[in-house]
Image (cartoon, rainbow, N blue to C red; front, side, top):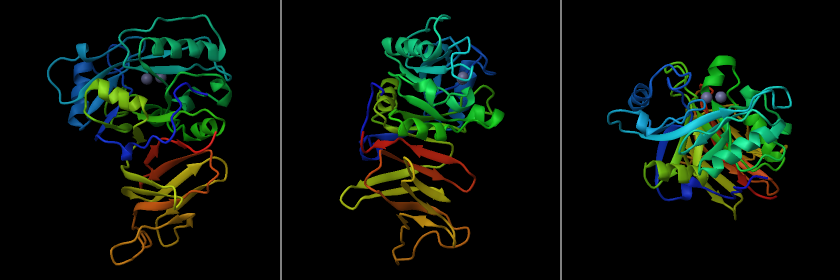
Length: 331
Ligand SMILES: [Zn+2]
Ligand SMILES: [Zn+2]
């Protein structure tokens, strides 16, 4: 359904290093509270490796940032359709990453065609188009009918979560994936007011170096995962054994999400269920995560063999999540 179909991209099996940053943030060039230089400093102090500045209608980038900062600034933009273009009367917000300049505003066009015009405009200038915060926008499956030429959606958007609890779009993502939209999921802050909606949404990218072109190429290739906190340290596929072995920062559950009633999950704790999943074992063969309060640092999840797609989701004991991109198993 999308032009950029990817099957089996596994960043953990790819050469390079991990870089962590956010791919959606606003400055005083639009409705953000901090000027570009201050916002970049804020993220540099927070240990980010990169940030995409994505002001509404205005391309903000490295030229707007003064002084030296030990992080990569990616030029981006956020545009939106107008006049109630979605099935429920809301509008699409679309982020363009790596755009060379502003994207022209266009008021004609209705329905998904209005969104498609912006997706095409971003792609034509060499940018990566992402459908922003679809849960907050009230987008439904119908709104994505026929949309193409975009990388994916923001599965996690911290700003819309702290505002009205509509930051996690994973239910819609699964609906789209089940219906043949082979799209990826990014994690972002959509920072407007640093401190309230910053440093809560990450895209963790596997790339050969931290330059903007390398990071953007890796994002385009699907070599990343999204997170609101947890780290995913390894995802190893064993097709012969039919397993996916995950290693992660301490978690209360590790899930293999798939279409329909397929999938698998391991939960921590003495009553933690294991559905098509095995615990990792210590050197002395002790099963992990069976003691009250003890968390998991991974799981062995079993593939059923007939999934359309599978993706891994890790949740920590504060409810924060990490989402791998889907691996497409059949058309
Ligand atoms: Zn927006
Ligand atoms: Zn935004």
